[in-house]
Image (cartoon, rainbow, N blue to C red; front, top):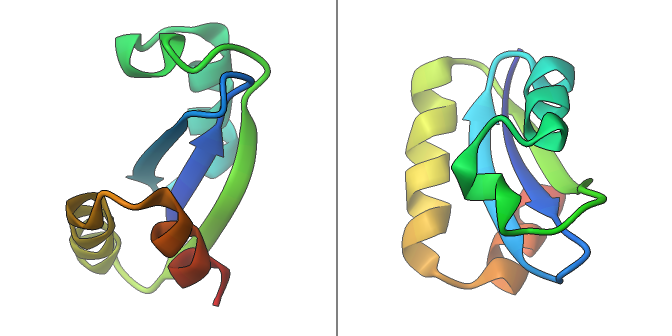
Length: 80
């Protein structure tokens, strides 16, 4: 299972990523082991996620959504 996900922090900011193990990745993000999610403020919630067949496809979609620079549009895409 390969997933593209968006996290939302208490600050209202979003973080997007992809992984093959969402529960493990989410726990690492919540522990604050990564600098990119420290700025979000806790608690972190999964705002949206979507599964893909391959890691290649998930990374391609992640890059596409990040290029949009529009969290609302990315959330809508992941929710479909």
